[in-house]
Every structure is written in structure tokens, then in C-alpha cells.
Length: 142
Image (cartoon, rainbow, N blue to C red; front, top):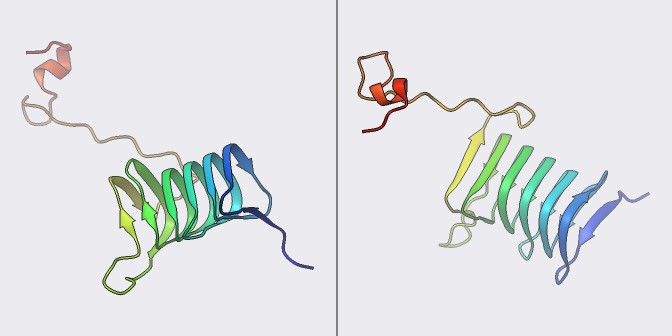
């Protein structure tokens, strides 16, 4: 028996939430939330939004918040994208052009996508060493 697969064909567009218990292949466009065990984005495909999968293989375009255990990238990663995964593989170049193009994004390698994000570091101001800046301590601005 063949493995079941959810497919968004080239020329098709899905907006909203797509949840599947079987793998998803996208040759068209998905905008919104996508939850599945695996996601394969073809070179003609695009996924924009929140993605939560165990395995991602992308030759197309992605943007948004991507959480996966295993990630293979060889497509376009748009600006304002956060990618979190235990392992990320970027495929090599195709001739003289790179096959993975990154915009302004955050990549967190070795991070369990199921763990909450770490708190942001505390910035030290112009106060004494180890103490917050005066405006931080009082809430006043200069």
C-alpha cells in the first residue's frame, strides 16, 4: 500500500491552517499554519507562515516561523524568517549560483524546536559595572 500524501499542486493556493497526519508536498503556495510529520517544498512551491514538522526538505521559498527536527534547505529563505531545528543542512551550489539564498533571518541550530525560546540577554548600560544604567533603574530617560 502506498504511503498517503497531502499535495498542494502547482497553480493551487491554500490560505489558513493545514493540518495533516501524513506527509505534505507543496508545489503551489501555502500561507498560514502548516502542521505535518514531513514537508517537502518543490522548487515551484512556497510556504509562508508558521510551520511545525518533524522533517522539512525545501527547494522552494519559505518565510515565517519554521520549527522542525531535521531541515534540508536548497531554496529561498525570505526576510523576517526564524528557522529552529536540531539539524540544518544547506545543499551546495548549482553551477555558479548558490542554491540556498537567505534573507534577514534567524537560524537556531541544535535547538529543540519543542523547547520554549531562551530569554533575551540583559543589556548593560552606562552604570557601574554589574549595575543597570541609571535610566534602566529609575525608568527615567535623558
